[in-house]
Image (cartoon, rainbow, N blue to C red; front, top):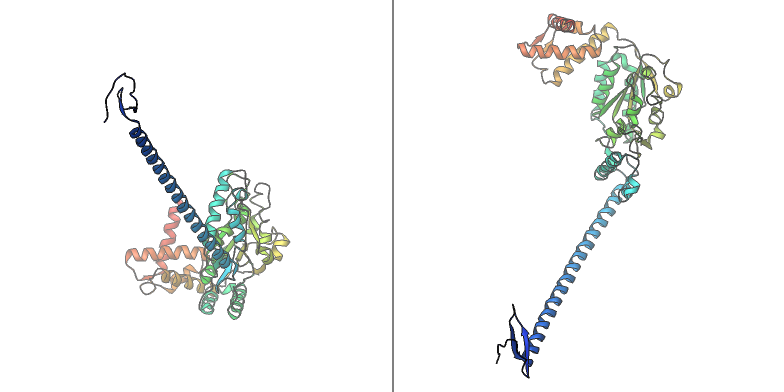
Length: 411
């Protein structure tokens, strides 16, 4: 029996138990003890449940971490095996030290190469991209290359010497199943003979990427292998972008007007042609290092086509690394063939070769121009023919385009 008492002494055998507010209850001592004991057991049971739940969660987290660790280890082993085995046929290893980069990626301090935080962050992003893409890049090797080389020789008959070098290199690669290695070409000749046009046609023939460095511009030397990482505007070089961040191991690079490197002055006190020394030599190009990123890669499959008007301003070390080809201006007949090739090629590229044709008189007008000018005028004439609905391009049409261009320049 429970009695409600207020401000009285506890009778024998009873215990006062406090309740909400100022009220308390008197209940038999044995009942109070049992109630307290039951309450304590409940608390202990709930605590045991909480502890067991915490241990269960810890076990689950640990199990999940161990599973993720096993999977990451398996992925790392698979990546290591993939990067350690030889490249597939038709591919070439451009990043032989990618495993080392992967180890660096786990160490924040090892990734830093500059005092500039943004440069370091950019390098980390690029390394992650390289790890994702792997160490190998495809080698561009055209099917039916013999017919393509024959067409190129027909289109540019005054480039027989460099085309012969190209033909021999492709034949050797085809016979041996190895990547084509085309010696660096230095095309020596006056402006307007088609040197730049030739380099573009070689890239089209190979079906590969292409890039160019204009050596009549300041800072041209740093464009090839990157600018110094100590500069805030440091950027990766053309070779790294074409090969490591590109799709092919053997791009074509035009080194335009390298004899003008001295005229543009020294960039940050450095020789504009200095970065060519290691790039043009096959052995050193196999372990080329981008200056901006401090990442080593293999650029030994790059095809270089350099142009110059004279050898006087080019040092002997550069000239000795290249096959010098003297390109004379085309004869009248050769110029006509070049014009016919450019005209037909432009129409074919636009899928208009069955709809429009150049008259012989129009080709005679084109043959008086440089290949670069031929390309420009051809495109203008074709566009005008399409706009007016004409199916033939005559000599008068080309003269109209030429006179229109001269009038626009005068105004």
